[in-house]
Amino acid sequence: MGFKVAVVGATGNVGREMLDILAERRFPADEVAALASRKSMGVEVSFGDKTLKCKALEHYDFADVDICLMSAGSAVSKEWSPKIAAAGAVVIDNSSCWRYDSDVPLIVPEVNADAIASFRKKNIIANPNCSTAQLVVALKPLHDRAKITRVVVATYQSVSGAGKDAMDELFAQTKAVFTVDEVEHKKFPKRIAFNVIPQIDTFMEDGYTREEWKMLVETKKILDPKIRLTATCVRVPVFIGHSEAVNIEFANPISADEARECLRNAPGCLVIDKHEPGGYVTPYECAGEDATYISRIREDATVENGLAMWIVSDNLRKGAALNAVQIAEVLINRKLIQAKRKAA
Ligand SMILES: NC(=O)c1ccc[n+]([C@@H]2O[C@H](COP(=O)([O-])OP(=O)(O)OC[C@H]3O[C@@H](n4cnc5c(N)ncnc54)[C@H](OP(=O)(O)O)[C@@H]3O)[C@@H](O)[C@H]2O)c1
Image 1 (cartoon, helix red, strand yellow):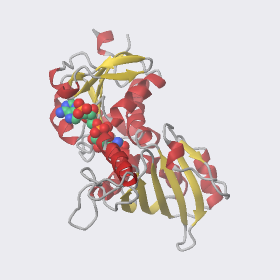
Image 2 (cartoon, helix red, strand yellow):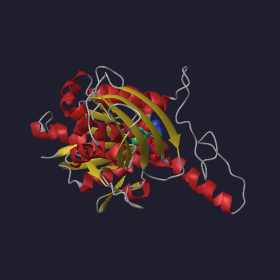
Image 3 (spheres, helix red, strand yellow):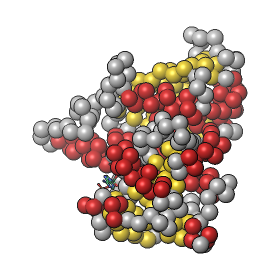
């Protein structure tokens, strides 16, 4: 028998994408349950060519669930992940709730799949922040080749990274600008339509935002604690797809050509880098795609061993849902879990 998978947050941006990806990749599941809050009971969501009726998380019995893909925010995860894990399901969580817990592996399969081995400590595995996921996929092969010492990154993050209400806010504001109506903002601290906002998440004492702090701490946990990183995270009026302008310093020399070659052979990476108008990838083109796209690779002559590049990926896929499903595939392929119903 195959696995039983529960998707918590199935009506959300990430949850819907998880259901699509499970179906697309023919995940070995006998049964998939779609769960959300009580208000979504009975709401239909697509799963391949079927539809599933959502059930309420609070009434659901996880006794025969093998894998729970959790995507309902930190507060829900804090309360529910330990209960679901105690019922014997491995929780793969998309929120930031467990990422910094030393007993919880934080996994990007192309980068640190081996770190998954410690997942039984809490029966919880964390998925990184969307901006970190695509960044480390591109950094890993370069780090292996020339040892990264420092990274400076500016992000251009789409509104879908803030949930489905944030997408509605960009749509409503854009319409209001054209119809000369009042432009209201709730999800974002300022108007996002025809604007950019240099704040994602809350401010910390040192003036950085939590989103910027997450990129630093998560890159260290996933890739190498010795890497120094500074980030400026910016919200832009794009629906799907996060972009990053990245400057990387290395301990050893690496040319732009060597980096291109190295990234061309790296898992999860696709290099599109022609020195002509349009010879690079933009977020519009990466929506619905799995790869992390790397363009504009060039040498940074202002430091001894430096490169600059442009990294783009679908934040709902590699930044969230795809990475979570890939983690579940690692558990199965490495035989780290067995279907409960088979074992019974
Ligand atoms: N979007 C991204 O790019 C991205 C990337 C990485 C990580 N994440 C993380 O993934 C999580 C979900 O993000 P999202 O963008 O999918 O948000 P979203 O579109 O706002 O969806 C939130 C989902 O959580 C459900 N939910 C809320 N409260 C619940 C409760 N008490 N019990 C059960 N379900 C509840 C909602 O169900 P109802 O419809 O019933 O309210 C909905 O399905 C967040 O933690 C986010 O930080 C997102």
